[in-house]
Image: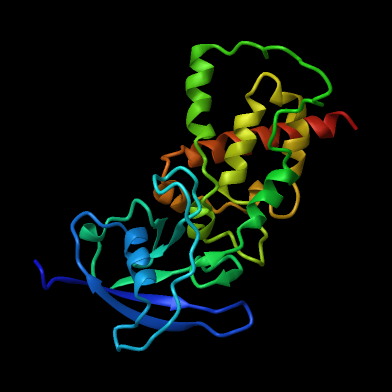
Length: 249
């Protein structure tokens, strides 16, 4: 066990203007390591497998317990969270890459601001003006709370968007995470005040009609959010809103 090692192949890019390169690393094995702990080991001694000094790997991470969503990356070709990816369960060499559908900031870190722009476009919030205390909101039945809670677990990791074949520059598709948040806030007693505005936002370019129902999103979601059901329900609501608009012109 003392001689056992972990082999890694990491795609690196110093900044958006430079071409990507690959570097290989070999570090001593310890039981129960995750990908983040491996990257931390490299930072302690940033030397490639060939003995060439290099810089520590740049990546995003925070909570280390699959809550913040910041350490999402491609691991052995699969979109997943680095904090919950255990070395003992991965084939070697472990191949680490940044998301391919988001602008690279550096190494394994990417700019995922497009998700937040999409959330702003669909008004993914409960509307209150904040000028005075509104008191407790309308009560929700336990059944309604149970239906809403899984949707509220989204950690904005963008795994669903990276895995989606429809999410690309040519379609501008908003992605499953945004659609699921529309469902969450449209079923909220106060949030539904903006229901029609959210549905109208999904009718235009990049809206829900761009979805090809590949179902990759629900397969890679680290929080097991019922994304395909959200897409189906919101898609039906968009159709109803479109028909209602026809008769209210």
